[in-house]
Image (cartoon, rainbow, N blue to C red; front, side, top):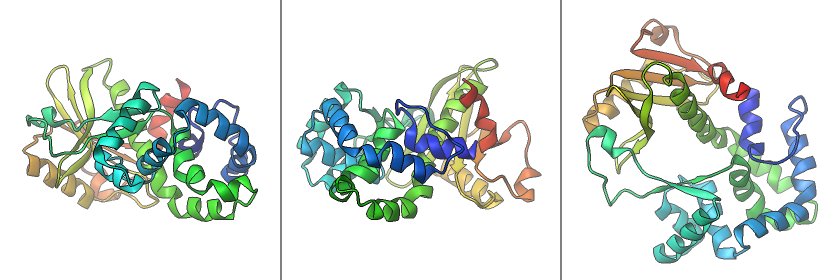
Length: 271
């Protein structure tokens, strides 16, 4: 599953067969970089090809996905940026995500920026690593791409791991106590990667760690502190970790603390 997630981060939503036994960079060069002119034409057709829209999309792909920060990266005003967002949402290239304040019994805070989601991982990859340095790629020089991708590949996979964890969470509770509300929580001080509420009213909170180190008890303590900070009482705590857990946190595992790994997400691939 870690391999599948790694390849899905780049090729999710890309309409071609991918041989995951081959190195990722080899596939990127073959299917994307070497076919830049054709893909650029296809993507420009989807987006409308406006430079401001593309700048906003790159701002989303390279930043924390908050509207205000994406607009700063794109050097556009909030009003101009929101016009771009409306246009891109209508074309189903991105979606708007709101913080799940209601799960924490809080009113939606108008000061908290909305976040933006690409509808496919491939489009996010394109506007993070290809579109900003298109001149070199167009000329067949891929060195800058390789450098930038190597420096950000691990961090870039974090978000996809979170999204897959959200999908798995919904599936895993579907037959027992279906989840009726799910997403992420953030405000000006606190961020929680996974928050959900089941049909029976149980509150689920969780975190995802897509790193090569094992998750330690300190990560659980930090999550509990964040929940306390916003007054959220969790009935069930879930963790998703790429590389497993320390023996200290595994000893705490029970029906109210569920520990998943990347391999746990395999049913998503089967579906």
